[in-house]
Length: 124
Image (cartoon, rainbow, N blue to C red; front, side):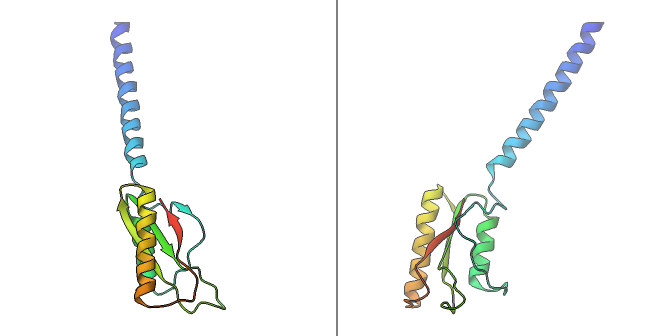
């Protein structure tokens, strides 16, 4: 009789551990909601409809490897910021390269030369 109860208790404990481990593995796999590795705090306009604010919020919400690139903001020298991003790339390095391409393409499209070069502000 003693054996029956100890086997049930062992089974119950083992199943609880397996459920906990499965839940932890599922949470660890997603990068959604994470700001990742911040190299510098990006300047985000307070306007929620601003393209750079939208791009950064999409970057944070993305579940895969993503990156956000922007020109640095200096209150005295910069009257604007240029940004670019890439979401859900196969790796963090690929996301950074594609975000830089996006930022540089945006900078070339608007034909601006001041305000600094594009830099990766955050990646995950």
